[in-house]
Image (cartoon, rainbow, N blue to C red; front, top):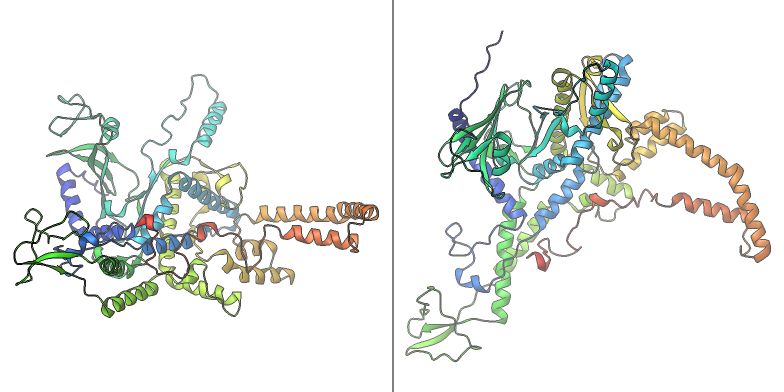
Length: 622
């Protein structure tokens, strides 16, 4: 029998968290740097800045408008939109084909559950954003410590069948979040020891949380000197300020979860949970991996070359605004006529500006006016042009956002888009797929070994394109037992719908030639997750078309002929040709064509106007 792990003390947890934070100090500094550049909060450095003494001369700070390019945010939006174009799909392979129906149900349960959790939390969307823009996406998923807290209790004398019916209805009506805790974890609050063959051995979340809610949840109070005590363990005062936060360390290892709150001087254990998972329930979607072991060098974001370039580009464009100002409004300073040294203001230490539009100023003995200009010529123009060109090279290719240049055919654009997706987004897709598969396997394991009964998910959100009904899908321990040794993988197709058109057309030709079944075509070529329902819809459409041909069309022809005989409205065309043209036009409404797909929506985020500099920024955002 394995020796039981020992629960870490508060002091040990503080030391572990501190060590982890120190190891990731440079990583978090890089994340903050990228975040500020992305949201245009990173300052443009001037000559008086100790961090960047070679920046813009400090004397021009007052006449300079800082320029902050939005290009990083535009590119992040486009990359995330491409990753979001097709949702992850679950594939379960089993050895016993007799239980294939159970495997299909488990696939639908996982897809529906993912959609339900995402609808409520948006954790996957935040993971994609973090993975593309900063470092890597982290999600936490595990059964709650108290799932179904108000689970119905049996009433004395109640029949077992009635009780089971009542509990089944209760479980069916519960949101999936009543069972699983599922959330996105900000990467700069997450610290972990290096992974081994069994995954992450232990980790910490160090975060600032609302103080009032946290203390009320765990029955603690705050003393006047900023320490935290269990209510009733001394004189404490309640925190009534809803905006006040406290620092909490959430520690996990393979046996324990411990919550620690940090007071003004000492830390206190809020809660301890000896969990049954035998693993840390955090899941990582890596960005591009470098092979380095150092956390600060291990992952780089998709647009990494753009970050330092945008900083330089912002500086150059800011300098150009000063040149424009100085050209139109040259500044005059008071200087010593002999030495040409500028007269300085006694309070600010800045050169004294001579204001021609203000009250008349009398120059002192030996003083004169000098104009100080920013010497900028071809060097600044060349540097600015080169920087803009580099940004264009580092940005996502136009084909990625659907703005492909005209080629020999639509297939040419599709081929370029496909090559871009595979080569550029491949590592990101692999990271997301690995994370999704690990989460899916863990949820199934928890139903079998932790929850121990059926868990429902509504099927109406299983398919993002079409609701499949209001029935509920239930998955229980018996179903997972039937799967036996199963292989679960997650498939994420980053291609846009237009990329599937050649594949779909080729598959449809094979169906017409008898080379494959309609079900196989719908499932493999079209990516349909519910082929049976689609085949049923096709049969209904065929029946409707037959009714049109045999019943409604003859009636409509007779009506058109009568109208033409009475009013002459057909202009010489036959009634049959008019009805055929109307039928054809109605059939194409809303369907688009292979070369002009439907309105792409999320796949086409806002972008700078075509033809302008990549550093274009709307005036209200500068």
